[in-house]
Length: 188
Image 1: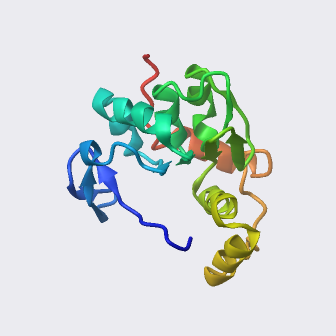
Image 2 (image 1 turned 120 degrees about the vertical axis):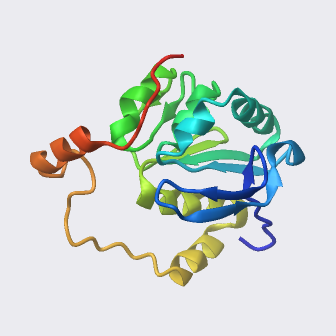
Image 3 (image 1 turned 90 degrees about the vertical axis):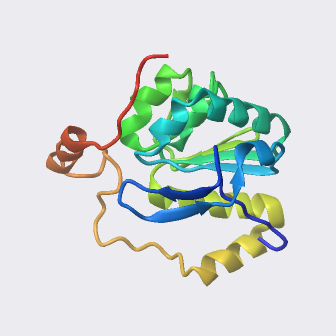
């Protein structure tokens, strides 16, 4: 998006490792970014640490008060839920986490992208691209979003039609249910 400045924030700046060892650099501490315009909460196994960290949840709540958009991808919506931002709102997440999303008072849906006021939630990883394009269009217009889509050559033509539990073979659904890496603390 033209003119956008991006910062990766964390409780403390520095290298943060994913569960697979990829290192990402947090440029800014949460305390040094009190009023972001847009918040994007990623998901995946690491979100559990943030969801259970009251300092991080306090930051999400405070930042949301002044954001233009507060967004999440995949299980990042569980962080929004834990912060109390999804109570009574339609929201989505990775399909394996929809039950947990409901425990935070959200109304879970299998939609890929859900816009509820200034909150946008996206289902799994590829839905994050859809959310990003939806956000780009809201910020800069459809033409800019289409240019971004073309620039990343996002033209999905999956080799299989198994991208949701309603379409995937039952064996694949059960395999993922039994091997889910999403660690969810259901205590509130």
